[in-house]
Amino acid sequence: MIKAFMFHDIRDYDNTKYIERYKLKSFMTINEFKSKLDYLIEEYNIISASEIPNVKVSNGKHAVLTFDDGLLDHYHVAEILNDMGLSGTFLIPTQAVRDRVIMNSHKIQFILASINEKELVKRILDLTPEYVSSKHLWDKYSVTKWKDNWWTPEMIFVTNILRYYDGGDITNRLFNSIVTTDEIGFCNDFYLNEKQIHEMVSAGHEIGGHGFLSSPLTGIKDQKNDIIQSLDYVKKFHNQNLIFSYPNGKYDHNTLDILEDCGCKYAFTTIKQKLNINTPMLEIPRYDASQDIII
Image 1 (cartoon, rainbow, N blue to C red):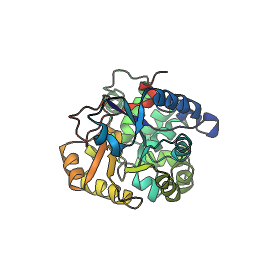
Image 2: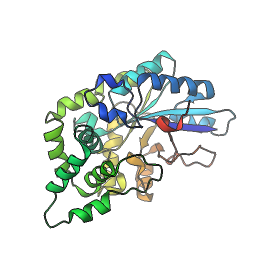
Image 3: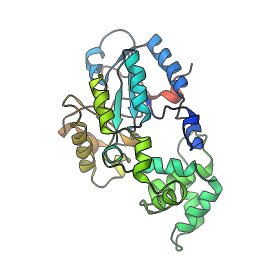
């Protein structure tokens, strides 16, 4: 039996000035991470993504540790794993790491962490075209399909409208006015750099792609270009098995065909279930470690 686990932000809250962002349930402190890691080590044999085919039909319980978004946090996580003789699979967004451009999803999160939600909704509606009904926008974007959701309607609205309605203009204007205009400086404090990634690879960790933009691939006009740029960048760090994770878990048959044509061996989804002998290697399910590991 194999389970893959997905991690994101791992840092202590007192090490950031945007504390509201780190109160979200998908984030954990370093001690919380270590506790979950201790549990996983006790319950599972930790393997790398590349080892999945070798143990797919074996007995025992195995776990794969994956880390999305190319965060600076993960450099310190890799050091913790090094000390324990473990390896992880780190999935990096090309534009954020190489070009120092903040991921749109992160801009939205930090905007939400920096201003009152109701005030933010008002500012967004003020920035939308006058011919678009505010009520129509609220009714459309303040709902979610997720049943187990703890977000407020304002948080849902802001996230949805900036992700699916705004082409980036409103998001950028809000981020620059509310958070910072120093995008490169922000990225240097938030994302891995290439030197750190090379060190992680040398220590035995795997590096994979998380898209060029790290936006949902099904919403991108040219999926192929996004994926190719992502995987080509990964090759800068190693020439081994190509690994990918779907931003926001979104993909379709076209995505799978492109990855196969690019020679990608493993790709991770956000579907919560175990691997079995029939699991396609381009549709590896993952549990969210922040919510699905209960200690």
